[in-house]
Length: 354
Image 1: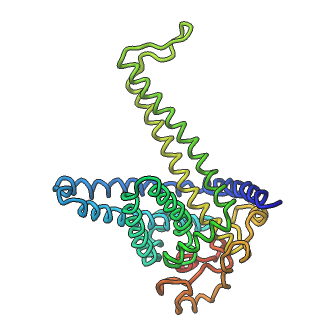
Image 2 (image 1 turned 60 degrees about the horizontal axis):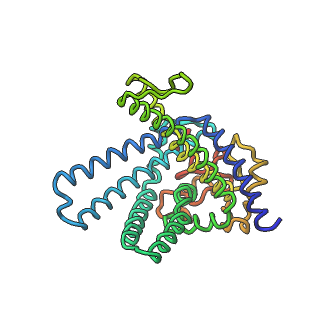
Image 3 (image 1 turned 90 degrees about the horizontal axis):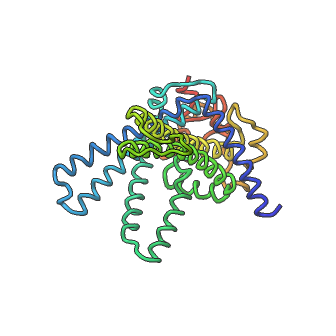
């Protein structure tokens, strides 16, 4: 088939897997609540940090004070977002194993990853601080090329980093290396899933924008006292404030749905793809025949090392994981797969998801 034939073939199969991810997620709509809570908390954090900073004259202290407050903001929001993302992963993992748990329980269990979440937060905060400083000083053609290179590097290194930390219980540097290697060796499937979810999300958002724009136009026409009609029929004329507000709110709601869809589906897709490539086991409820035909999970095809067989639970608790940064995990997920009953989680799913 050649390179392009394989690339397009993988892209098509990646889209088929994406459809299966959507079908599975729609069975547990509670997963879409996680990013809602994250967004609300992010807004509270933004107001809680920057409003006092501005009111008490923080800007008068110059660039360093602003840099410091930005680092604080990056750290807190990254810590919160990563924690909630791990909770969402645990909830999804539990759901496909037939052990549905609530948000509170999932977030509580995410505490098992506390050390790894903190390490990723420190790493990512430092990384983004350096990146922003470089970008702020990049000018001209050379600066643009540097920014493009940085963007590509961030995409390769961070796209799968958090799912890999969750899955393999390894530190941020190793996760970044694995993320880049994984994308390079799975270009067709990676990009097809991302583009597919982005297109669906974009369509939903556009519908929302149309509603919002319609509300704005109706408000303008009403205020200006203009009537727009065709062949004697009034298309836009006087519209009540309640109707305009309803259309506007509907548009905002649709746009938010599009954003939520994109966030949840993409992050679950990353985890599903990575788990199958490293374990060879499809999540329950998904067409394993299709996934087996679309993702090669041998070491040569993925560039990743095959996972070792699971150790007995008693031994795993006494010894540190091979890829662990601390003693709280049991190392890489067993070869049985994260989404199989009795698979693995942090530190071991069967220990705390009942």
